[in-house]
Length: 459
Image 1 (cartoon, helix red, strand yellow):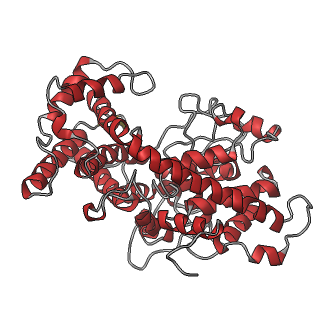
Image 2 (cartoon, rainbow, N blue to C red; image 1 turned 90 degrees about the vertical axis):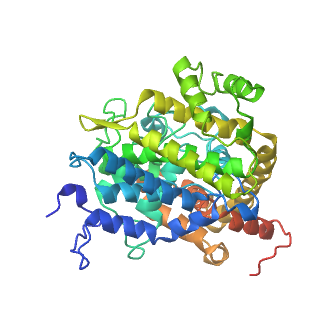
């Protein structure tokens, strides 16, 4: 009934008594996974006041799913839905952020810095060079990246049928849908800071995307699947719309100050026009942004019914505008050029007022320190427990004293990394898996315990 796209890596393709399609079952496995539930404790960008109930990674993912399916509904109007798999897209939208560590991008950058040496941090070598001549200074030259971690969770770390199951054992169709960056680190010169899998998971990525392991990505560039293109655009839309809403409500983004020819607008456009941001902005993009501002709130957020009504209109206007601008041409998703650039400009509001602002910067310094100290405290203990320098069997007594999930992740890496990793690399990858699997609160708690500080939680 279903073709090769719907096969599973385990080979288990049994019929479902509830008559769900294979990709529908994939979506449900993700929804019920512990990895998805964890996202409720991971901040989107930063915490606000408790009464505001800002988006976290879980609510963001649910809304990405809604936007993704709305894109498909729009494109399928009047027919032409043959290229889409609604459930695979829903699965990808729910799963796209599974690999984000606690504290978001700040921790992602810190973990990557901890694993890579200074020479290769911003100048990654291609996969074949890393395998042939490993760097002696990098702990893991394939680093850390949230999308690669999501792929690893789905294919290695999460469990569906116990330890013998390859992750959640999703279909190839759903795994392609969640693969936003179908290449390894250092393989795509156009996007050097993004990659879709680690070296220890390269074989799985090659199988999922149909790449020849003996050829580089440059020799056989693989494009996102149509399902992944929908997920990617839905993520961009949701990020812009919902974060703008959150940070207006929390007082971080003063939308009421964005009046025509205002000093606030002028400073923002100067910031967004810098080469390290978006570069020079075309007049039509500025015009589209100024038109969007006419729908924005005219006063600071006070929680009134009028405020909520205005936010509802802003949200609806932006979602409709971005979704309706999407077209399908010869099996490829097309983003309207002006709307795509407008979306990027709207996201710059978050960078200008929040991410590059002093309040969040101070918080992130502390959060990065927590991640760094967790790594620096646990790494020597784990390396000793697994007798990395002796080349002998692990010290079972010391291994038992490690956090349970850390042991699980190290052992799974040892069992599945093939010749790419030696024991030392397995320990470091397992440690990165462990730290990135924590919620924000768990990270604070683990850190307080390991550095000997009081905690409100009990053993």
